Length: 418
Image (cartoon, rainbow, N blue to C red; front, side):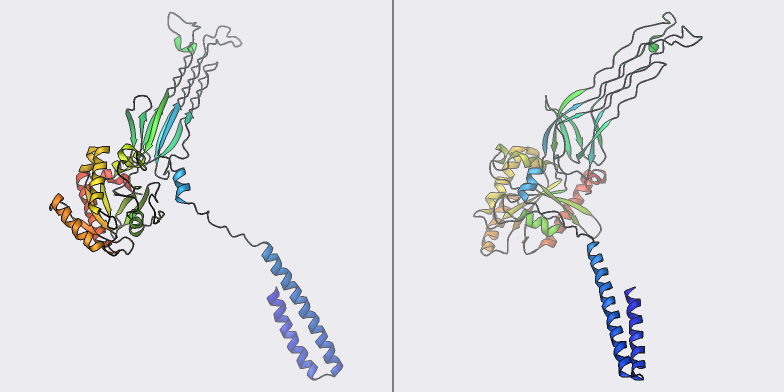
């Protein structure tokens, strides 16, 4: 509309100038005043339209506020006690049919409905036990009714858990279930059966029974849910060894990085994308120190996440006083926590070769390493911060991944696609 008015105003201005040049000076002054009034009116309309647009302008939605590693660690829960209660079955009904012209219609009491089950489902979109409640109650079945009406069954209650959660009995500690794949289910508590109405007890010898049975109570159990991160490779090392920096360099994960110990307070999982579209999940396990198997440092809370990794990457800090001692301590802590972890396939990587004075330590570490392991293992030297020799590390991780596929089969690895 404003564009149309401005076009007409320009045409009128040119016409008035042409006519004014052939008229008297008085007529020219009248044309000029009329043109000024039209321009003022047009500016007022444009300002009104611009103010209206600003008032109706959509508000810009800002992103979520940044949360520190400490705040995220408080919400990361990987161990929880859960009580589950199956639904109670509905009671059976004892009644007799009474209709017009049918004074003795016989028993017509219906059965009660079955109680609902509590079912756990593995969901890859859930990453923590933060929103898991401490108790779950399945709906009860409804009671039976007259005229052979059966009670409605209680609906099953589905609870989503992260992939990699396993459940133990709260009393004996016996392993009950392990949810390793997406959409895998486990019936945690069965609902009670519905009671029988007196119609159920009709026989040839007893055509008018009066008895009915109540519904059975649902199953009640106490379970301990523990989350163990599922990943192909696990980064294991002392605090401030550069695990989070290496994970940032290899994947798109963004763990917090700092120049102090225990920067990582919860496991982070990143996906290494290869050129042939292969995805390798890499877990950053929080720092392990001497005595972790006795619950020192972050202790046993995160050692359980190492069990699920197919192979391990021991990251050694070359800036430490004795890098070889870190390898000895890490292997010793693994064996004391679980002896089978020492036999897990592993890569040994020396980090921070970009720092001054690390060349001499690397030579000594290689000598001690070859003396202890021989030719069966190789020590790689990288810099996670400068991304030095990362291509060799990626090739080694891919080789370990392929060897794991040959040993375990592609079916088992399919559940680790993130």
